[in-house]
Image (cartoon, rainbow, N blue to C red; front, side):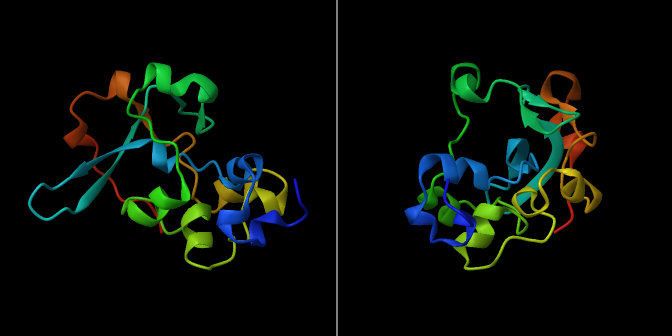
Length: 143
């Protein structure tokens, strides 16, 4: 990977660099509810069954689509289009021309600062296999 690749335009990143840009917060792996009338998106604390709820990492990232067919692979086009990516998301920030936040693992060398900042969902979510009715799990995540 190139030095400080995260400062480059997103459309110039190699796939390995694109993947490394992810801060690993886990919020894109949480279920969301969309109001059909307004389009407003409500966040939950219910995680995809493949998300390790303690680490906020996918337990089978490489083969996730075989188990979760509607799992999205974020692309630059999708990042610009979906309303549910948090403002803290590295993809969203870079697409908007903003720098990575100071807690980002690429800047700090690991996830500890992100967890301390309250951005990671690690240890704060429940698997969809155990959650019950999703509407009972609405939450607001810090921005």
